[in-house]
Image 1 (cartoon, rainbow, N blue to C red):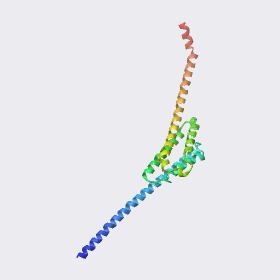
Image 2: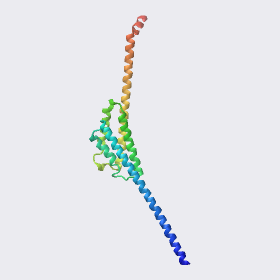
Image 3: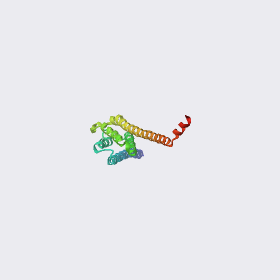
Image 4: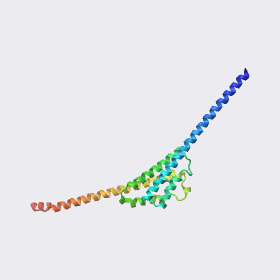
Length: 195
């Protein structure tokens, strides 16, 4: 009877340990799947960004030499950083800011294209040329500032263009109004009555 009790206790302990090991294995498997999904999504995002760069190069916004630093910016993000939720979140934020800048470029009036190409070129020149410089510190400190500066420059350039156009339109309207008034002889008739 005691032997039977010990055998049952041993079997229960083995089953209990097996269940714990299996659940731990499942947790690790889920974590690994989640990690693979995160890495896969980041690779897709990198590819989408490269495709966007290819599009703006075809549209004349970038030349191949200017495009290369932007490609390195996206591709080297996870070379010196681990792929995890926090880093992917920062990566998506940076890529979204770049997408926003590029979409503003594409929607900008043609008359400011040269100024915006220059701003994009300045950013390309400020990006590191050596892959080892694309480290965690660069991505946490310098890269967001560079991209924010690009967005600010685009916004400022477009704003100045719009204000210049409005000023030009207002002055053209004022000139047209003055011409219409002087052509109608309004001032001449009024002046004659006052004298």
